[in-house]
Image (cartoon, rainbow, N blue to C red; front, side, top):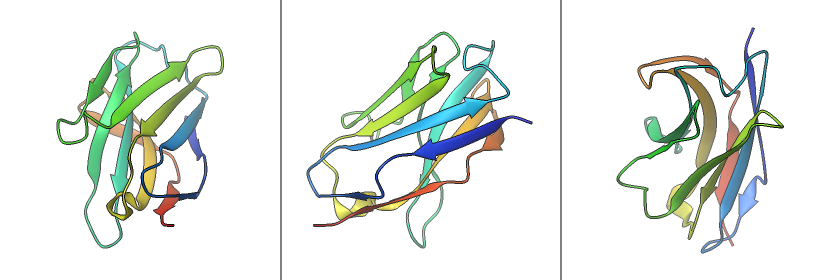
Amino acid sequence: QVQLQESGPGLVKPSQTLSLTCTVSEDSITTAYYYWSWIRQPPGKGLEWMGAISFVGNEYLSPSLRSRTSISRDTSKNQFSLQLRSVTPEDTAVYYCVRTWNLIRMDYWGKGALVTVSS
């Protein structure tokens, strides 16, 4: 059973950078055709796909967040990470890391990490 676990600070101040890491077990982030995504859900709102990193390390970002977002990976630790710069309270959300087959089918999700942006 593939497992994903988000980790990082639960509170970030406005204008700072939100950083989260997803640790993957029972699968390798280099497994062909799997993409490793970040998805968020603000309170009372729907899910928003933020971006993904592919099995070969290519980065795919949502156009609406591209200017503030970076996704990277550490294959030696089997982890991938999200950085969201210049955050505002509107970035408060539960952030999920998700395994996605070919950017089509999302099959395994982390439990989610609540990040609050507040001074």
